[in-house]
Length: 398
Ligand code: AMP
View 1 (tube, rainbow, N blue to C red):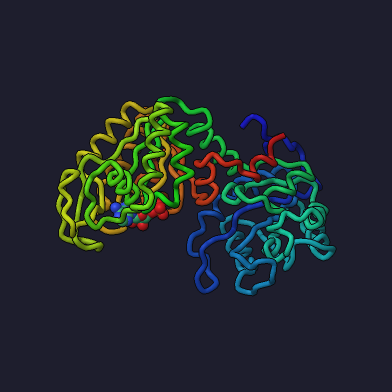
View 2 (cartoon, rainbow, N blue to C red; view 1 turned 135 degrees about the vertical axis):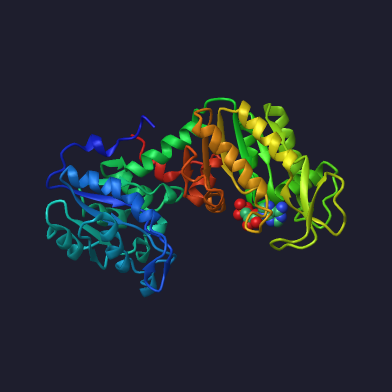
């Protein structure tokens, strides 16, 4: 973290233009923003830059227009939505490079804010094209990256701009990096990871990396079934990737060699149908009938997890422990989330959770405000958990 320049380091910016990469790729329906979390997240950085005297030109992608102008993917409707959240005027210009954009920025009042058009309308954006980067850089004096969620891409506005002009981490970016650093970079040990979700196949790299980094790895959700099956337990008609048995064994072997405890469910909740309120029962491993499927971890498993959390000083969590969208198969996820939240509130645990379904699960459990940090950056959060370099972050290092 110490190697990044912060916007407070930029000093007085009177008369300067800050190009700010935000993530305004927000969910929309009928031209209206249905979740303004990402708009609200941008306010701190924008206001700070305005206070320092800068004009602010906002850059963002929206959807996947693949270098073409696609009317439905214009950022035009977002300008008004962001103005409301910001409490200030936000103008819009239908391009992100060129003389007319430069003029629109020049015409802004001091501390004015303008949103530029979807950067992915430009062919070079996703290729990290240097010529496009130079054209965009010509619009401003400094570059601020506040979009951690796009930092796993080496695009012009997520990384290359930071390489060719004075660059700073925005407040959001800084918060995210400092939380992630606490969770896996330089964590207080023991550190425990909780990984759930549907399939091992989508998280092989993540599991292989984590077992070399953490002291304990609790595996839940559908992916635990593959590990249980690999250990010789019956899983009935559960979601289970039988072709990944060797991968599961390999992960267990890496864990053993690295001194990482693997925590698997000891009891499970089974049902014959994959639907909410399906008839169900709690049973031990090896008591799963051929026509039953495991849809959640059982109470004994949750108790073991809670005990492990008593030992841990840090928890990093991705993926639900069961089919949490279907009640009552949300129980293990909700109970474990509450256990993490209680320990965090008591100052005994640093708990960081992230990834799309995980954010939804934490909200569902009512603990979204009680954990140390929740990352809404899906892909970037997972790639960070996999230990992969994030080009957008690396480009900011001074
Ligand atoms: P992921 O996107 O990999 O994090 O997976 C999240 C999905 O896994 C959620 O939709 C859960 O319903 C699903 N899931 C978790 N546990 C199970 C399970 N035991 N059987 C089937 N699906 C599950």
